[in-house]
Image 1 (cartoon, helix red, strand yellow):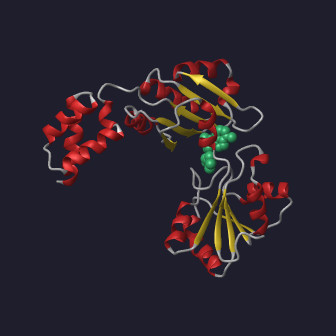
Image 2: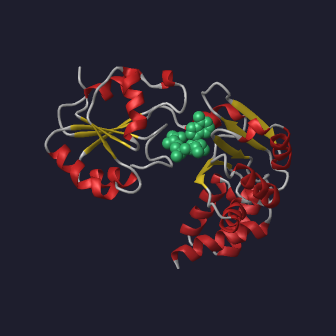
Length: 286
Ligand code: SAM
């Protein structure tokens, strides 16, 4: 049975290396749609050939996405079904599609996600780093200065940080991680789902040595995962319970100094940290 007879955009995740990772639903939908908007039509044509499908395609990439919006709105208006695919993985994740999806949603069109491969989730699922909280930074800036500035901004965050990087800049990025974040644990997931899939684990300095010893380790596609900042005394003030407690005290009209004193007695930790947090809550409404 077809997914829908009204105009709809399917956002279809495609494999990041192993073609068997395309879901059965994705294969079916790609065969049913009237049009496929692809980041690179020649690249996606290979996937369609593998599936034995012939479907009209149009390009939709960073340089023409805005211009495509009206065309695709028109197609959906006419009741056509369109699939959006990128070269690999989930569209919109460090890939084109955001401008289109936002425009379609704003105009009330139906947008249906078809889940599948995504390099950052695939990498996190097997890295052995905490996954309860993580930040996804995509690609950091190409230039050293802004790249280091972003790493400095992440320095005190205890979440795991996930980055994408190309083989051209992987060593420069590891150098910056070593310089800014020191001995943090870093896991490199290389060539996920492909023949030479490798996970390397160590400090950034150790990983750089491994790459110098074995240049194969510098090739291919990378997800870089960095352990978050270690918990420090005073981090209690960042706890969910602590935030809720301060919020209730504030709403009950308790002053900042007393809020800090009560939180310190009930939750523990440093009064100074609680005070800063309480002041921030007050400042937000002042
Ligand atoms: N949309 C994709 C996704 O869902 O992951 C990401 C596209 S982004 C342009 C490409 C980057 O994703 C690569 O430079 C690399 O950092 C990461 N990536 C994609 N495929 C990968 C793979 N098989 N192994 C490791 N990293 C991969």
